[in-house]
Amino acid sequence: MDTSKQVGSRIKQYREMRGLTQAGLADLMGKSVVTISNFERGKVATSLYTLEQLARHLNVTVKDFFEDTPPAPLPEPEAGFAVTVRNVLTRLTDDDIENVISGLNGVLDARRRRKRGE
Image (cartoon, rainbow, N blue to C red; front, side):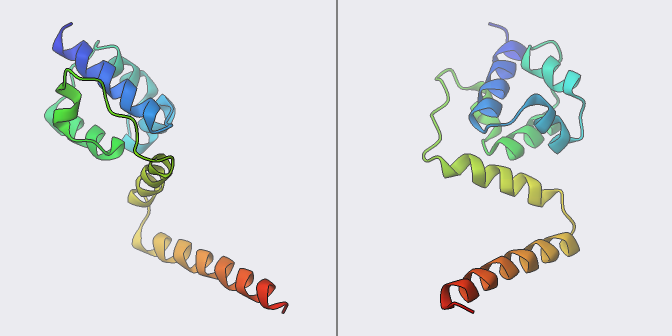
C-alpha cells in the first residue's frame, strides 16, 4: 500500500473511532468534505501542517498515521466525548467559553436547588 493510502486509511480509522463524520472533521478543520474524502482515499497527499491539524483534532500523533499496527481502541467510552468537547472548545472564542461555563454553572446550581427542594 502506498503511503498516501496508508495515511488516508489511518485518518478514516481514527475519525470513525472518535465518532466523527467526514463533514464533522471537515468543519473542525475548515476543509471541504471532498477534501477529507480525498485524504482518506489517498487521492491527495496531505502536507505536514495538515497532518498536524488532523492529529490534533483526532487526538493522535502524526506518527500514528504511519504505524503498521492497527490503531488501538479508545481506552474508555468517554474518550470520544472528551475529544468532541475539546474540538468544539478550540473553535470558540474566550468570551464564548466563558458563556458556556456560566451556562453549565447555572445548570449545576439548578440541580442543587432541586435536590434541596427549593
